[in-house]
Amino acid sequence: MTDILKDYFEALERLKREKPVNVPKGTKITNDSVSLEAGRKKGTIKRSRPIFSELIEAIDAAAKAEAKPRDEIRERLDDAKAEVGRYRALWEEALAREVSLVKQLWDEREAWAKEREALTGGKVTPLRKTGRT
Image (cartoon, rainbow, N blue to C red; front, side, top):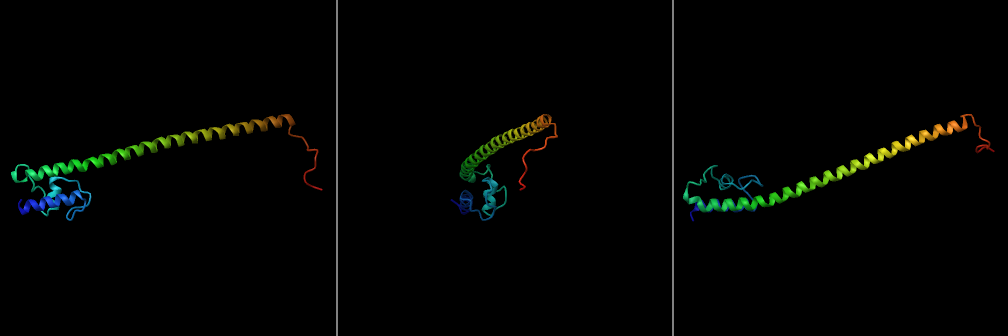
């Protein structure tokens, strides 16, 4: 293996371990990111060059392995968002029930006040004295 290929393979390993030196951490593994991490220009790894065939296969395998955990994370995120939506709907239903019960209580209270006023005529004086001696 030539020194150039050795640099590329070392760069690929750093990207796999998420310990890059020349590119930002979390960079997606591609031919261009490997070449940039190796200190070369973008586009130096080409499929048309037979010397890079083994490297390109390794990059493709690493990219597939990298994509799998991100898909799992995306699924977990989507599940969490769905759960949040479900709990939000339950919360809104509970609030609607509470508001409905408060409205019903208010209406009953007003009806009782009208009924009490109709029964007493609004002019009843209490027989007992209140708290005074």
